[in-house]
Amino acid sequence: MKARGFGMPRFKNKYRMRSFVFPQLNKNPITEEAIKLPGLKEVKWRMSRPIPDGFVPKQARIVRKASGYFVMLSLQLDGLAPNPLPHGHPRGLDLGYDFFVATSDGEEIKRPRFLKTLQRKLKLLQRRLRNKQKSSHNRRKLNQKIARFHQRISDTRKDWHFKLAHHLCDDAGMIFVEDINFVSWARGILSKHSADAGFGQFVNILEWVCWKTDTYFAKVDKNGTCQTCPNCGVHTGKKELEIRIHNCPECGYTTTRDVAAAQEIRNRGIYALLA
Image 1 (cartoon, helix red, strand yellow):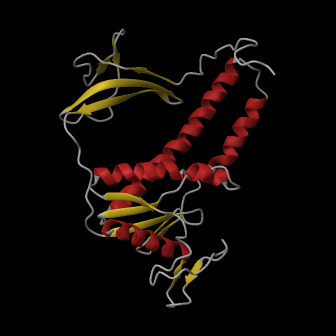
Image 2 (cartoon, one colour):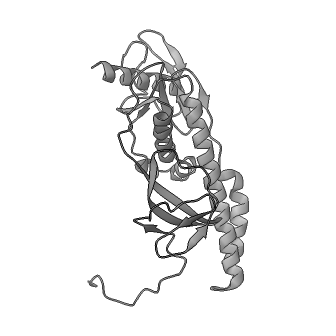
Image 3 (cartoon, rainbow, N blue to C red):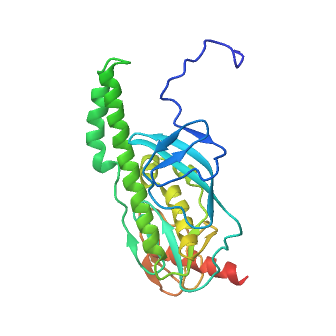
């Protein structure tokens, strides 16, 4: 057995590191035109949004992306930010592959195929990269072009997630979702579709948007949401994936499978609050 830590040295690629942190900042380091970083002169920048009143910048992370360098600031506010309290209209959300999200109000939203729509062009670029000489200038330029292409896909997905999160929080006082480990979704046969959809990123964005819009957010038990009738609570048995209609044999309630699951998620969230 080869011992760890021994062997040939690993030569570091200068493009390997993508970010570094300034753990402390000087007093008043920010102006509209530049930011003063410790050990460096003022660095010109373009401020994307003003810093809210009362917040003090404490840390700065420099991130290198395909489209350039970005500064991510960590801000501190004296005092506690209260979490939203349960109020208003409850809304359950069911995430899936057929529909990205189905709501307990009966709305079903298809997901855009972010990668699939641009996959053909991406394959052509990667095929050209295979024929480029290693460490050549043309290979580096093509790598940058592919990286910008991936960032375009990522930015488009993230923008859609934010817009969808705000749409779902409109007219809702409470949002309930399933407590799902999306890492396990990314390991299955539909791993490519799961990564393209970005379910985990969407839930994180949704939780932040709920806090921002004073909407209560909570996760509920995921087990059996598709097997329970939201109208009478009867267990209807396990359904195969091709069955997309919920039809309760006890009370006769009929709706689409995803909407029924979202309504059961809403019911579980409300029961948890009343318990």
